[in-house]
Image 1 (cartoon, rainbow, N blue to C red):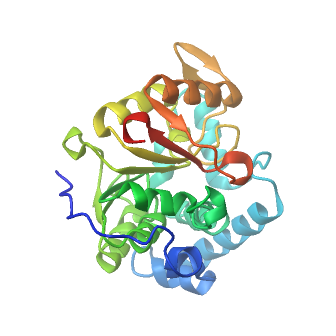
Image 2 (cartoon, rainbow, N blue to C red; image 1 turned 180 degrees about the vertical axis):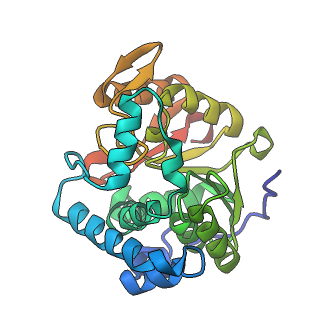
Length: 293
């Protein structure tokens, strides 16, 4: 599988319109839109339940700091019980109820992460989005893209780029992503491939937390994709479905803070520099390969 590069285009460094002209980032979508998005993919008998869970989840997220919030859903309890028993239950990703987590996460976090890239003040003088446009972005990979909402927004922010999302296939979230892919013109694939490389931009929004050995996987991503730029929103300290209470780094089990430090150190060792954005709390972080600066 390859991602063909498109001819380079002339971009305005700071695209016109709020949020880079993205309708999805400006959208005030609510439960009705979520229901429409998943209708026909999940059984009608579960629609009300899943939409209700999504509303509860969003309410909890909006009222609690992302760095300290601990969720309390049946699916999350199921995940952490399985981790405690030494056998992580990755089947949680195939449960239709996981769509609720994807939706709430988009509304409260990942959408906001993309919004933060747009203002010129995020990385003066052009902003992160403008800086990427100056670099020239023709290929984008959205790792672990969930329902594909961030991937769809990337097609609006970078209309001349070839955008691809990755996720585990054979479940409802992948089916929703494929539905959005046909609407917004991106491609869904089950995994990355060295044939993709080099990729201009890799987005990883709460992606590496889903690997018990995230630094090992980071090295695989860098080896396979050789990205020129990365936008990363890690949350190793946050409890959520698919996240781990601790991680394996260099053969040792460490907490989220130590994992974050190891992640940054690895990025720097591999030839990436974290650019000094004005984004609060540095999330998402903006990294560039030193060879592309």
